[in-house]
Image (cartoon, rainbow, N blue to C red; front, side, top):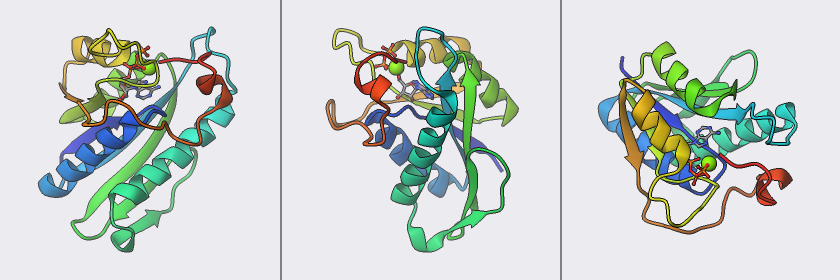
Length: 175
Ligand SMILES: Nc1ncnc2c1ncn2[C@@H]1O[C@H](COP(=O)(O)OP(=O)(O)OP(=O)(O)O)[C@@H](O)[C@H]1O
Ligand SMILES: [Mg+2]
């Protein structure tokens, strides 16, 4: 069974990444790992446990939104994140939340799960309009030895995830 790795932050681009990841996982019958990284950058002021819980809720929202609920079951799992089974095609979906350097953790996780392809959004929360790619997606493309698909959503603007932390909203925490 091959594995797709989808990296999501708390921006509206997460929906574009997840939508494409779910489509590929179902058509190719690949397992899917949904990954978010709580940045260890000391400049980013947030509570790690709160951020982990926020990401866990976001992942759950994304998985239930992009896989039909009646074929989705939750599997027993210890720790942060979760494991789901999409019964219609026998695809396993794993939610993973790591802490550390965002780019390094995405690349390490790609190796660990032996990802066939890594999906990232073209942009995230730090919308500096003049840049085509955000710094995380750009660095993952350069650093990760795996194939990387940069998902360009149709929407250039949209509401970010409503569970977004105050530090993200105020622009204190980016990337
Ligand atoms: N903390 C994170 N955890 C997992 N994936 C992330 C994280 N941050 C960014 N990504 C991935 O990288 C994509 C692009 O986000 P990126 O951070 O590069 O852009 P940006 O926020 O617009 O720019 P920047 O952070 O450089 O100001 C996101 O759509 C997501 O796929
Ligand atoms: Mg960012």
